[in-house]
Length: 360
Image (cartoon, rainbow, N blue to C red; front, side, top):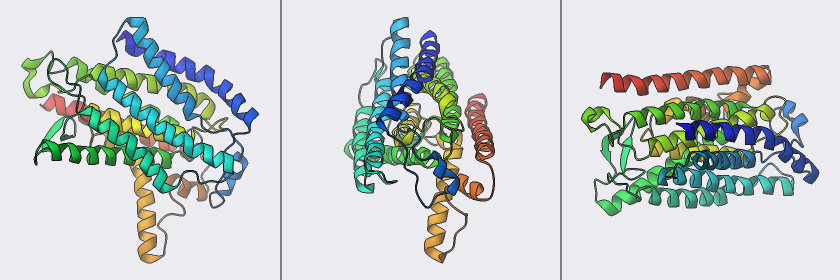
């Protein structure tokens, strides 16, 4: 538990103090955000605001997590390493996307194909490794079972071990792509994605701690009520480091933002959320805890699908936060209300998680 608290505290300090230094570096380099021309006109004033702030989030998370382990003498685990690899790998893909936008002064970075290939490569490596590294109890970081609050009876290895690996890689990459793009779509207003992510990873701190206290590895007498997760406390420590890094970054990212996280941050955060949900065996529950991100994605899917079928729009603009912005809502009002919605989804998801254990 000390490692968990230290990881979060160190990550917050590093992010809080390191972000202004990174802002000054980006300003000197003139690495500013390019604003899309078809977006809300109020966003034109944000042109030139430093971006790629996700670099600070990633570094603060890595250093905070490592510092917490070193100060308490806690050994690293395979599960934590896998999530941090996924987060950093997708962050690099996002960094390349951001850098192309800045260097070429346009709102489009990597081509869609290049981004998918980059995300896919990182995702495949993560998924393949997640079924390895069994511990003394024979548990691997992930399993081929689709999970809700714990593994369900739906096993992707029903057709054999080899096919199970292939199906798991496909399933894991679907989750990774979906979550990274969901956070990316939500990152459209100052502090929106940062605050919502903070709620979600804060919830996963509680999930990891609870799973650790009720783990089957030490409490086998609980029978079906215990959790078959390999390193639940390690997942809580990673989530705590992410939460701390987001707290520090939000100080500078809140309206009016001094820096944006960019695709560097949004892809990394989405990857971290996907990785933690897979390794805590809460893949479907994550859609409830991260419900705001799901709503944002659905608004975009509905807009595109309805327009292709009818040539008419459901929303003034997608994703959903732009609909309200064009309806006259102030940016701060939208962000705060969406934070409230994100918090409600988190409370609902954590409530489901706890209620399932109570009812057995």
